[in-house]
Image 1 (cartoon, rainbow, N blue to C red):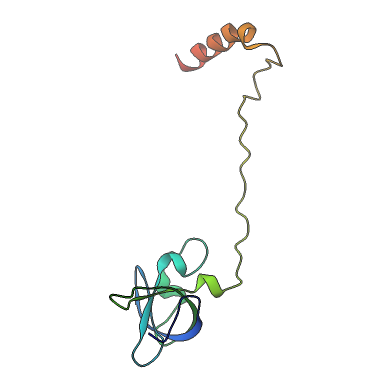
Image 2 (image 1 turned 60 degrees about the vertical axis):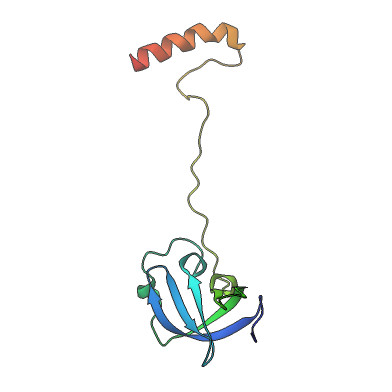
Length: 120
């Protein structure tokens, strides 16, 4: 095998399936970019972004020595960084309950009463 893990290559998209993209590296060699290695984040439809015959830059992730199957990644060679998703702030206490910093033993009966009223 003339390729090794870590090689960055240019190939031509040879086929598109719902699970990934087949890339022709040379006349005799083809590899697969699994859907998880196409880009960072969620991929809804591969065919919307990539087309057969397009040139694509990939990195060799793995080579199976028995079957000579090559796993490729496009995500590893792109500089595209997704924006941070909106972060949700989660409060571990209720903002409506004003218990303060009393010991749990003192606040327990009030919390139980409040929970009972809320759920029953």
